[in-house]
Image (cartoon, rainbow over all chains, first blue to last red; front, side, top):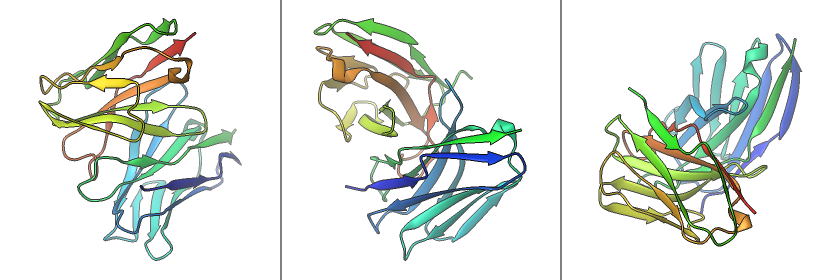
Length: 112
Length: 114
């Protein structure tokens, strides 16, 4: 089955700096790559997703890039704020397959 | 619109006990699933359903049963709880297939098995 690896496991940045979280996947058939944010004690919530027919997608301060050849995708957060502190999960899934696989998560801390 | 509602929020079981985790959604989503979240392991799929009367196994189904008698409800049953089932459980739903649609998660159930 699909295997998703996520790095780093923890990331600490200063407020205003950028943060980058990287994920790799094993199955070249995967074509949907969402990112979820989970604040402490809360439910995971989708923040952005990308499909394999595009290489980059932006939504205000967050962006995701996808390199299908290398089978990796990354989350970029610019101008980080303390409220960005959370655990971020990447995921990957194949067409017609409901078994979406998640990365192990990255705990991002933004220091004021 | 309550979204995805899970009960209970916390539960402590003794080894061998059984229980049912409840999940209901009011968004008329066809797809529902159960995940468990363990430290350092992300979210792993236990079981999922693509519609009423249809269920299938995910990555870690052993020790769990599900049923989907209505579109709204998707309960998860632990038949004989084991300490290895200590985890946080999330129910999720999506309008389309989980393969290409955003998941809407419930608030989670923290289960401890002693």
